[in-house]
Image (tube, rainbow, N blue to C red; front, side):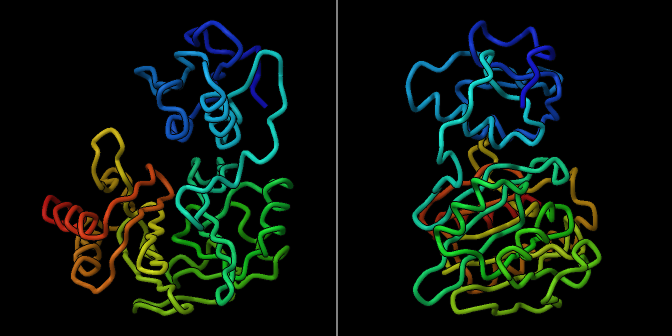
Length: 287
């Protein structure tokens, strides 16, 4: 819960505020870009109080996603029910409850379909209301870990739902509870679900392609919303920049396509598959 005593003085006057524990993860600004801005030092503050119910809900999403729980109200109001999971595109939900152990990375949920198990991509912080929503939707059959950094409470979710857990062999020490270990080749996990290794950010980074529509990209690739384009985090490429270049070139040259990018860090975004493919090819050339 946000701490009134730590309220940053640069917040706009009014009910909502951000406290000084902000770690500049950008998460809150993804949900409320018109209401929350960053100061030059990276500290987020509320620059305008909400004026509509939709703006109020945007701040509740920012508050429940914030990994340091630095966003709140002066009256210490409780969040309304059903803030998360939040449907970004039909059938794909962002979980919120981002975990500080993952520096605030997003996690994603795809409920079960008639012939497909439910998916959790990376893991949020454990939250009883979120878990209840997943139970009501049909649970989780597979926990798909994109790399070592964003494991958070994956073990707890997997044990609760009896899920299989997937991770690349190079990053498996971060999830010793994993049931399925990926190698360096593309792997079909289930019908319409493929794991595509992309060493770069970490040696064991993986893209998960779902139904040739959704790309769960972890920390490999994201929509850079300020630039309006796909991008990579060169300053956070811990393993190898040349390997990342080669990995993404292999993916561009593969038969895979996607309409939505659903990252760990960075913003989500949707566009026609041909446009996303062109943008990714252009990015690889810039790299």
